[in-house]
Image 1 (spheres, rainbow, N blue to C red):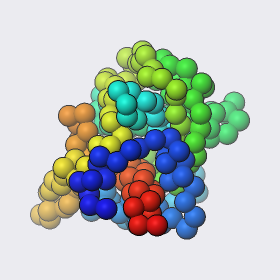
Image 2: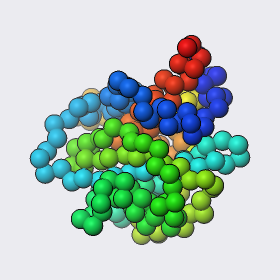
Image 3: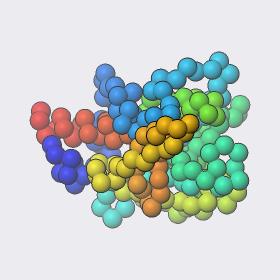
Length: 220
C-alpha cells in the first residue's frame, strides 16, 4: 500500500490492538528511521538506570483517533522544553509500570487517565542522557478528554491526529554541527513542534506496527 494511501487508512482501536501484539515484530528496526546520529540504536544500559513509564493516550475525535504530546516546562530538570509523551519515573507506591503511566498522566494533564483502557505495550527504551529505562504503554479513552495541565510541568498540550504518523510529509531531517561534523537528526513535524529523540523513536515504532497491520490487510 502506498504511503499516501496509508495516511488515509481507517485507524481504529481494533487495528491498534492488533498492531501492539504482532508476533516477531522488530521494534529496533522500526525505530531506526528516527534514531539521531548521536545515539547508538542499542546503547549500553547502566545498572543504576531509573525506571519510568509513559503513556501514548488515544481517543476518538471528529471521526478519527488522536493522541496527546506535551511540551515540557523549560525549567524542568532534564529535557526541559522538549516534546514528550506524558509520564515519569516510577514511584515505590506504584504497583507496576501501568500504574506509573496512568498516575503520571493524571498528574500532568489533569484527566482521569485511570478510566483509560490499556491496549498493550511498546518495547521499553533506554535514554542514555538521563539514564532512564522507559516502559511505554498505549491506552484509549472513550471520548475526548478535557485537559487541565499542571503548569509547573507542562507548557503546552498537543492533540495530534494519529494518521499524521503515516504521512511522509510529517518526517523531516536537520543537521546538527558538532566538533566539525554534520550529524543527521530525524524528526516528526507535529503540532507545529519538532518531535525527536526517544519520543520520536517510540512514535516510529508505533507507526511501524500500524503499517505492518495495514499492509497485511492490503496484501493478505
